[in-house]
Image 1 (cartoon, rainbow, N blue to C red):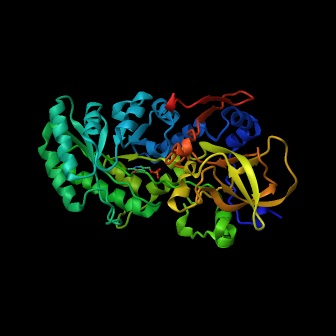
Image 2: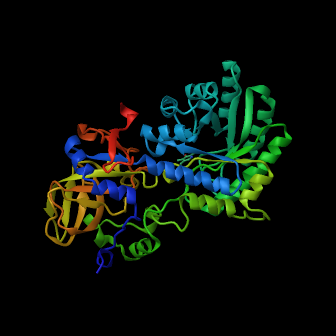
Image 3: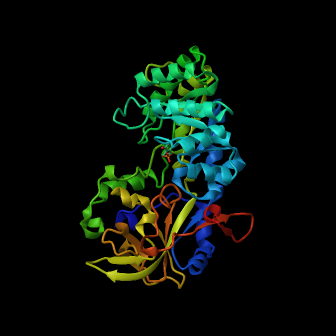
Length: 455
Ligand SMILES: *Cc1c(COP(=O)(O)O)cnc(C)c1O
């Protein structure tokens, strides 16, 4: 009898690196040292994900560049890895730009995205030769003025397109606006280097991305006819990742209902991130490049190659797949109608999914420093340390094969992408959970250090 046959759960895919850290005893030690929740970061996984994306571009014969979308996690270590590995960084504020420069990424390896950029951000971006994804006509005018006033180098821009399939998006330029932007770019002369077009789609649909990418390749050809550089397109982020296998995800969705959650809370499939995708990460990029956009004889890779257009991408979550975990200590255990209510020492602000009327579903691991308690099936929802009724780390009654006790650790897997620090605050004057970088050198014991973001 497996646990899943009794209670719907979401076991994560095997991850030897994280399992090594779990088995090493390091987490118990760190929990003792910090006396509160903390995050673990595994930069080797980031390197592996970056290399895999790069390999797909090479294998498809497509020229390109990967920019890490910094908003997915604030730690400095990812930027350090980008600088080492020749990747760029996608920033959306002066704070993020400063962090990226400060941790070693060159200005020309940055892309500045986000709606409405401050004049300070634009000035810095132009001065450092960063690529600017322009989101509006008035922003384009400001960029040109900034470059003229700066008297140093031309402003490098992409024009962000409003996706045809998402007409209500508040981001990007409409077809008419793109036409005007091209004329203004041509008129700006040496103040501007119009390098191409960009988009970022919400959702994870690959077909929509392939169609839009093909449209941007056509726009590049039009722009070149006006004498503009237009030799690259950015497809933004949104490469899906799989936290679990197909069967577990299917079974979970089929079985879950309000009885499985604390306080009878209920969720539908649409409320959840797709925790399994048939193609994910680098595999999703491969599928995208092999897709034949509507009405085209050629694949996206062929369209890019034949038009000498480079492909830029801005993955956040996909670069952070399996690159970290979050550790809470159980402080108390209550019994409720047939299940346990655990209280941990952190808050649900550390698992951002909880703040989008959703739930972070991958099953946490239970570590018992004092040795395991009585075996048996125990169901437990996980409450957090604040006075808010709604502050639950897991509404779901999770199945454990031994009874969780105060002092045990709960380790939430694969949290580096968005589930760590997007929403964290020092609510109740609780300290922000520190981030521990685990460098797995060839040693029997993993080595750790604090991330440099706050140092
Ligand atoms: C959020 C964002 C990304 C990253 O998205 P992921 O889903 O993490 O890959 C990339 N580009 C832009 C413009 C974004 O807003």
